[in-house]
Amino acid sequence: MVSAIIVRAMVAVGVPDQPGPRKAHSVTTPKSGGVGIVAAFLLGVLLLYQYGQVSRLSEGRFLGVIGAAALMAAISFIDDLYDVSFLVKLLAQLLAASVAVFAGLWVHVFLLPFIGPVDTGWLGIPLTLLFILFITNAMNFIDGLNGLAAGVTLIACLFLAAIAAAYSGFFVYTAALLLAGGVLGFLPFNFPNAKIFMGDVGSQFCGFMLALFGIAAARYGAEPLSFLLVPLLLSGVLFDVAFTLVRRLLTGDNIARAHRGHLYQLAHRAGVDARVIALLHWGFTILGGLTAIGFLAAPLSWRLPILFAPLPVQFLWLWFVIARAKETHLTNW
Image (cartoon, rainbow, N blue to C red; front, side, top):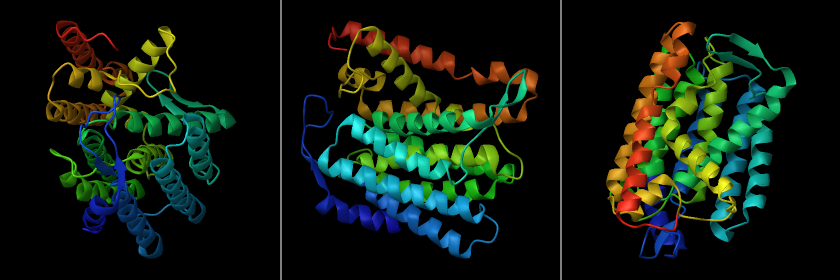
């Protein structure tokens, strides 16, 4: 309810997002609807810090989550207002991620299929920072069609909450539901028709928090879970981003420059309805969630084949998009 009230207000006062050659919309639409998501989550997590008895981290780590979340929200809202360069944005994200990491939210023991636990020691700090930055920017990159990033976040949070509850990770359970509530208040204003966009304050914040939830689940539940939990949930998003980055690197394109070459953007430009693309990505997230459940329940010897279960669907999607782009003579990709 808090999120919906704030989002409704932002429809009137949000930062105008003008149409352009690299954007999917054709009418000026306000953005920064993610302010509602941020406000609802921060309110909830502050109440949890003050009154929660079970769904807690240690004092320092809990304050680290709150501080990092608030800093990430402020940074991404400034990005909405002033459209800062990619390098400045990346450095600001690194600062917010560092707050969380140095409060203790980092992973150094990785549970690998066939191998078991591998302790990377202090190397876990840069690996965790890279993980946070990649997930944050992946969600930012995927936020280009109505309901896509918001729906993916909502479904991922619900799966995270269910899995965390099953494994007694009650902080992740509660925090994921708080973020889900914030997104649920926003989504009706964005899908199927957008009165407002999430903006960087929404997409970057959602990616950042999902990454932190994954780290907390991997270390601080009653039964630590695999660090692969969030990558599995976001397998559709990460496949799109990874494929696009590799393709642009191989063709010599500037990966920091805005473009419309992601698979979901190519599909839309080739005539696939934006609502269908969003629903497909919601389906990819559900598949990732079911795969994550199977992965966690399986013995170590079965985990590697289960880990790759979402890939055939992603390659089928890749084949369809490329075929559709060729069929419609789409050249600029």
